[in-house]
Image (tube, rainbow, N blue to C red):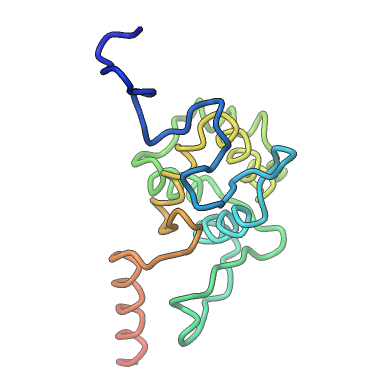
Length: 172
């Protein structure tokens, strides 16, 4: 028995499912990976939204009430430029990737001829991460405004951004 565990405690991190448990048991039936270990359709929709926030070319801006509820959709052939990759890493992890990490992404994942991370490459990151540490993926989703049912919930920052855009539009 490991030190520091009280009798009856099964895990040092009780919020993390035990390896023998069914993936997603805390998540009201929401699965991040499908039965074959691929990205689930629900997770893919969330990842499209996250990718679209940082990709080039930029997706069309939702109008009116769509701003609050519509998930973004990346345009065909979109990619993350080095700046987009840094912004995504900063918002997700609190810091941009090191050059060594960027070089590994370019070497092992799907990228454009110019080294921009494609959506396929973005999915590869999350498929590998989710296989190895599902909770890390849940933290990333939460950092981008998704709850444990994979619904986009407004964060204060997003609400301020929308209100600022509406104020600027109204004053134009």
